Length: 251
Image (spheres, rainbow, N blue to C red):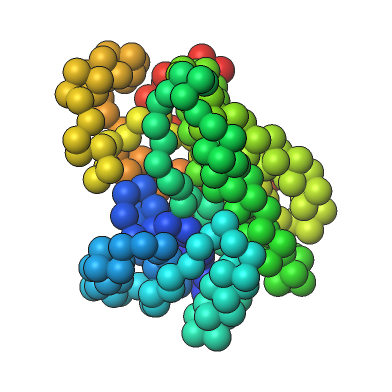
């Protein structure tokens, strides 16, 4: 099996760093054209674009707020004009994720979580679906998290939004199945990337003890799962959430 994505265009939101960059690079190495989407750090995004291009990936740099409809419209317009119509959408972009007891959250933060993990996939789907339906082929892959499965606490805002993302994906998988469009989720465990550099070592050690496979996951573990779900070989797989966490999830 080749998992070839030749002649496909894959949009991975927030793919200038972390898991998103690993996913984008993997999709590109499988043959897809992959733009680099970022929101804030232009220097980091330029560096990522160079990495994509050095890997021989047909790419471009696009700044966009993927929680805003007009920004998403412009994101798609630029991709369509330069790389072609989007065939694969990977909703990966995220924001800060503090652990707080419920008394310390406010609704604005809850709303921010919902904007990233429910509103953004909804807007991306609405914009990308006409092309996918027309060609009877498409892939939506939402990067969610194990936190919904393991009931992580105190993390209510993030867990609630990730639960909404998984529920939305399951419903959409049924709605879009007649069009040969699949909708799946990938739920990573704690996989340290750049934003975890300053996390307490004691917390990392404690989490590692919970992993049955007794090793840390790496970004490529997530990227490989996305490649499968994006491929033709996964054409009969939809409505699923695949946990990539070394066996941590209880179900």
